[in-house]
Length: 398
Picture 1 (cartoon, rainbow, N blue to C red):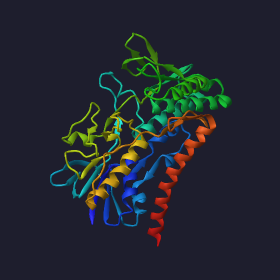
Picture 2: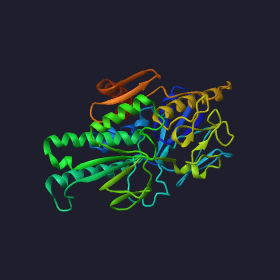
Picture 3: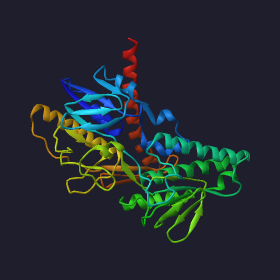
Picture 4: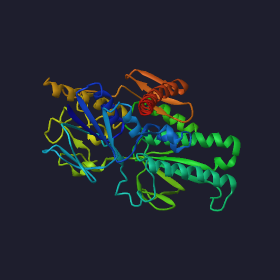
């Protein structure tokens, strides 16, 4: 029986386990400092108050129990790894492995050169920070509606720093919620404005022209104020200051403008890029060890043409499936091939039942149809998680 250890219960870690589970000669251990799997792709809806916490978080212990004693979950933080001895060190324990998959993901990168950014903004990579922002957003609307003590009279601004995928989805969903509220509570909701800010010349930098144009049009129709080519110099408790000398007042800010690999990478002596992601071999190995792999956002992943792939759930899952297959080949003594994958498509949720999507480079959709396609993909993933938990529950009550 070979022992495979997975560090990190994100999209990549869970997909690796799902793929490895079919091999009965493999025992799997999942380690995560959090007791839940956070569906970051649905953060936009949770922050805006449209989704509840049960729609963005899944209990990992219950999920692992759905594999009928084949997968063990350990709710601990992995602090370091001894690659020579094949040992993972936890807070108060150590575990050995035959094969290791590092899938620790990434966290929001609050750039240190922007003074006050970390202290005065929220991220979406962490469920707790997303929850705190949701509470602030709902409390703001509630206080304005009731004119309670502490509410801000007149117009106020909510700032979203970063106009990548997460940023535009959060801005669109909040703007849609405010538009919906305005039909019932009137000017109180209309007094709240959403600013989407990015240093790039366009929103969604790096994405296709169709997605950029349709997303911009949708955001503008929702009343989102888009500031591109805007370099933030500093942030204090009431204003965002730009390098050109201008400033805007704000009530609170969410930052989605960058990521940085999670803390475990700090202890790994391996080549890394500027955002602390591991630089892996073509077969996603690190430390020159054929039994150690890195997948998802904690590692820099390239396609066959040496283009760096975006840190998305889709790429994390593709790398996980590849690594699971490669581990099987290594156990069997079969030669493996280099990782080769690309992004087959992307959907952008843009408030309510509206989305924009591109698939297989040629298919382009928008509006309700795109929303249905995105919803179907997300719902299928969620149902798969729920099915595994239900299986574990049935095993416990027998």
